[in-house]
Image 1 (spheres, rainbow, N blue to C red):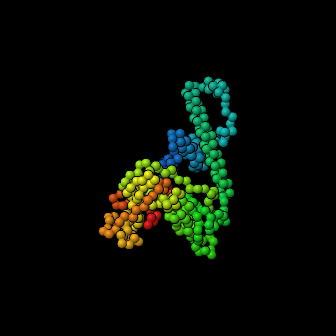
Image 2 (image 1 turned 90 degrees about the vertical axis):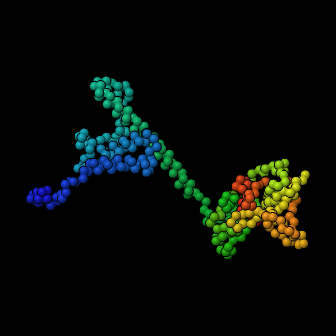
Image 3 (image 1 turned 180 degrees about the vertical axis):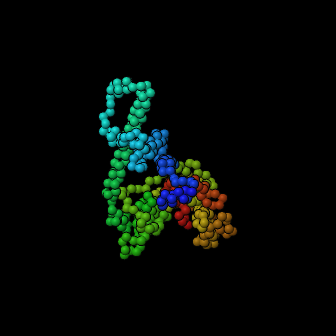
Length: 345
């Protein structure tokens, strides 16, 4: 019937179903609500009840005073005049309290109540606007400072302090750059680093891109060693150094405690899937024949060493699977020693 009437009147466009067209006002209102929900949930812009009020007020302004339909806004169609913008409100001189009280005095009680609510609401919104302006100003200022600071960043393309023989930084630790490959190309593809803390143990090839110049020459910072000598007893696993500066680190099981140190049965490390520490044994016939095993083999005796007390580092715990427990490993790493990378044999 609708199609027939539309054609009889000469209309080209017509409706083929009984649902009718969409309501633009309803869809526009739903879009505004969806935007507020999106800001609250996805973007997490709302952090308190004050933010919620600001978003609701902004949504009301957008729907009633900014969205134009049929040449006018909802506010203009219902009020008969254009809405006052925030710029207009700021340019208006605020009325003193005594003049405001005198102007409201002649109104009806209901009108006074409405005007007071509007004044409080406008005052709260203007105060919130000033707060947001200050936040925006602080953000813009910090962004400008960061942008200016990035302009003055040192250009590392010059590679000062990163020649062979210099002390460089790798993952926050000091290393000596000993060689590079390929040698005839600069910058090289990779470099060989040796730790200043443990030069005999901690050495590695690393990518050139991971190395940084050392800004200040400094000694590596170490945790103080624990007092081991007074509590050391037979059966403990002792970590001792080759010298006082912890140039190299070894492990041994204490077999005797003396006045100036201790006698240890040396433990050798080997890495397969885990780093394990097993006692070393030497042949009675051939002293150079040294084996590494958990129990003593017939014809072999323990490899014993005398360690001075000034070379004591700490005592650790060896688990049943001949590996260091987590507490011992973390403490040694805090001393600057990565035990899993060391070869103590």
